[in-house]
Length: 293
Image 1 (cartoon, one colour):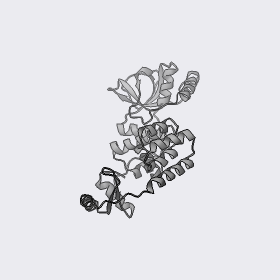
Image 2 (cartoon, helix red, strand yellow):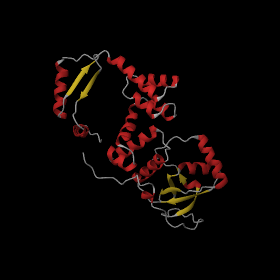
Image 3 (cartoon, helix red, strand yellow):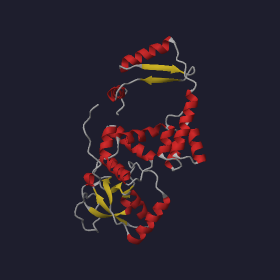
Image 4 (cartoon, helix red, strand yellow):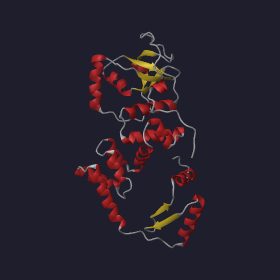
């Protein structure tokens, strides 16, 4: 599948927001003026709802608050005007803005830019990814937002952000895990390596609890997942000869242009397998299913 290339993010934030305009008079606080470095009243600045980062470490934030109280904000935040220029939305630097509020600052240095929603999400994502500020779940949500809202493919994301395609794919796969496992991943009880080992298991929630309780390493978690899988696979599913299932297999095979097999485990559960021989065939299947790979 081919698509138009997207703007590369791997060049860093300067490629998207510019290297900064000459500073205006610091005391200028006229709402609506853009493309300049200004001191903004902190009450006019709003949080960024598009920011993929949702969790902020309170201890680290308190450390930043002490630094801000002592030395002020050394690096301006990036904002865009909203509400016809009456307010400003954080694009990059939300931790600094939060720390400034807690430190009791009345104004905050800000680089004002006219930016689209797409550019805001791109900048927020690349800033956090480059600084390793996102947990794996937030990172996956950020990638999925760019795919869903701005038609990125995994390959374009990989090239833009400077990650491998396999990293993008593996990160997105985490979203298939149960909510309780994702919560453990967000809070640091599990690492992305632990979580990836659970994706293909039948009961990732129970295995996650066991990994946390025993304090298993990633390699030990992978071994546990393999052993569990081996136990369940020792009872191969009986392939049904039901004529209705056979008819569905045929219809799917004709629609996808590939071999399809269905094996039932119970009256209601089973496994659907699509066989492909190369990535081109896989891309074709994804395209027919409306999935951007």
